[in-house]
Amino acid sequence: MSESRLHPKVLVSTQWVSEHLHDPKVRVTEVDYDPAANYSQGHVPGAVLFDWKKDMNDPLNRDILSKEQLENLLQRNGISNDSTLVLYGDFNNWFAAYAFWDLKYHKVDNVMLMDGGRKKWLLEDRLISKDVPSYPRAQFSAAGPDTEVRVYRDEVKAAVGKPDKVLIDVRGPKEFTGEITAPPEYPNEAAQRGGHIPGAKNIPWGMAVNDADGTFKPREELEALYTSKGVTRDKGVITYCRIGERSSHSWFVLKYLLGYPDVKNYDGSWTEWGNSIRYPIEK
Image (cartoon, rainbow, N blue to C red; front, side):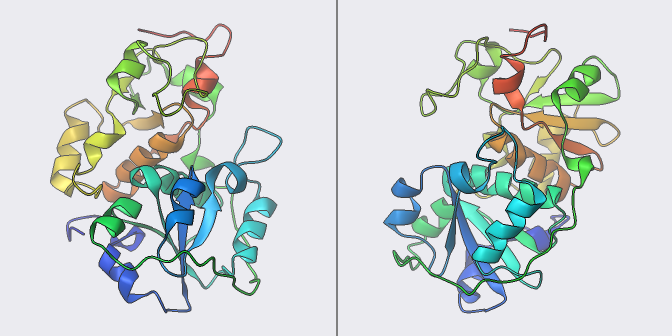
């Protein structure tokens, strides 16, 4: 973990996690899109599971968890307001970053990402376990919402073309141009139209991490990545992708690793915008 990062309290190394496996005040949590292919095959010892589809989304509405739903999730996993929650997961922490963003929306303070996620832990041949832990129910009270971290479709539409706003499409180039509407690994999450929100800059999420182990690149490289595309601190920044998970990853980089003052995640993203009547697109 680079000493030059602005917010080291939200990013910890695999070594730090290894050293705190038996710390009762630390709760390690794996956040997976596909737990059967990941968590169930072995995870950080003592880690609980947040199934992204089942645990991190409202079961009836397309929305993030309500305050009460989030509190229940944390309570039943033995997480209290005094706990330090360390998140990691598959896909280089896409869904862990989404969970981090969700928690920050509800103003949960003591939450971190494990740099490199599941990929780095396995590459380093660290201990794994198939045991599913159980912890006594804890008391947790969330303080949110923090409306400054989330943006909705109409607000995004109002930001299009404004000189003090910048939209970042963090999807791959083929999604951005409309050549494809979803990556091959997500065939059921497409939209009616392919393309991007007018004026958006294409800065794929993966450009912020090292290919070898999924860790974040040094601060200087991250700064250059975004400023070279006109994403500067004086502008209100909106990140989006297809369902809000990759954009949460880029939101984390901009807000916490680089300290941009005004960054919001549009979690409706392309599956909402691309299916909406009279919402313009570019190809």
